[in-house]
Length: 317
Image 1 (cartoon, one colour):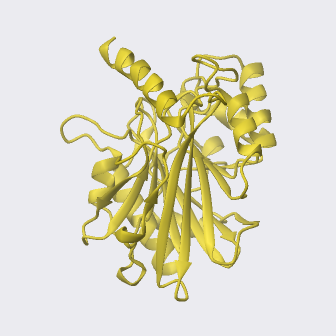
Image 2 (cartoon, rainbow, N blue to C red):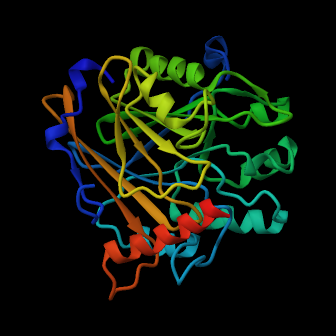
């Protein structure tokens, strides 16, 4: 994160409802970047995000979760913004008809960008290449080298003009058998530097399917944040993780990186609002997680700890 655009921690408001909480750079020029424009306020960028939907259309626990519940939750939001996904939005073992159903619903919801997770690749690169033309959203990844069919359909980055702000979005994933893998942390950092220094993006987002935490020296999203220099927001996916809100981690330059993961199976929707001040020289942050399908007669806190018990059961199994 640029030192002139530091995130001021005393301005952060976590509204979670629970108190206290590649492609080598030489190849980038040969790929035409996708430019989109979305409605935004004059001084803020709002980002909604999901991860690890696993193709679940319907509620997965006590009437909570699932893409249909997420769709209702998004439609009820007061502000519009980018809608991003950090990978595994498909269930890799489902039929092509089921995959098309999930993609059709994501199109209706207005997804802008997603990254490629391992579930998208379970049935092979050609299978994913067949599905991409059905997507109204873009797929990004900068550390895999795909076959010729898929490489033309997955971009290393996308730039979205959100009002007067430029938002650069890239993606990375973990090692997958059969896919040529380039170091995810180096690839993400190189791409983020390109987006900040060459494309002059005001905000750089990495959709990372590395997992929030991994054992030993395996790359994960906390390590990515600590070793980064130009990434502002990491939207996390891959392993099951229930967070009360985003984490703020210091990068190599002792500047803040926001890391956020929205549960799994459509149980949560993350919302992060970056409010820029002083001609983009600094920004403040407001962030919260929303529970899809939360009953009207329940508080966020009670629903969150209900999901916490599910997470504990998964970790114990």
